[in-house]
Image (cartoon, rainbow, N blue to C red; front, side, top):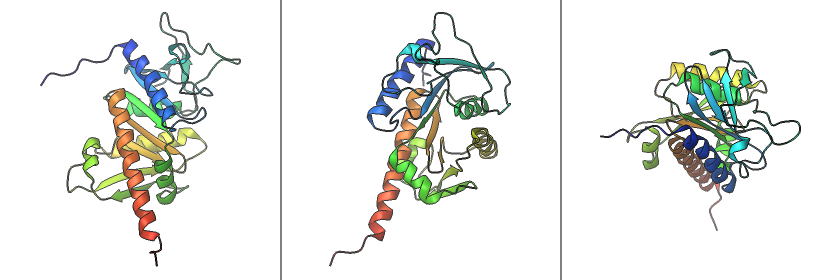
Length: 239
């Protein structure tokens, strides 16, 4: 079987713009919420990421930020220096200039911990956020187990297997969230390529932007199914 050649740098950056528009149109990134990144280089780690404070439905290539990690493995809220590649403009719109989200450290952690990861997307779909609230905890990680659905094949869960979805506390110090996710990934080699953050949203990843998007779509479908199933089971029968 022929292996698909890796996407060019230009194609990766364009994929961020395209996914931002798709997620905005789906109301997964309302206002200026959420952040998306792609890996441009693993050693040293270099990523392109969407900026904070800008609608992801209206981004252009010039709005993307090219960021290099100065200290691999060091989890601090802002462990980056802005390093534009030749010919690219970084943080040019607005006053003050655009900056990366504090959640950038979560992207760094996943990209560093998983060498095969090429894209990390953080979005706020309604059903995933509802499920994180219903089954999560503000102080400790919870593991949500649920029955197998056909869709789960798309995130590596085979028929008859029990799926477990991690729900992390939404610590205000985002570096703690990043630390918790890193520890979980190191301890759980068969973890789903998605996690929930309590009362906050959904983070997923994949080898390519397309695969990361597919993983988000699958889990949001599963969360919608779980929520509606719960709603129907608790509804009073009609007289």
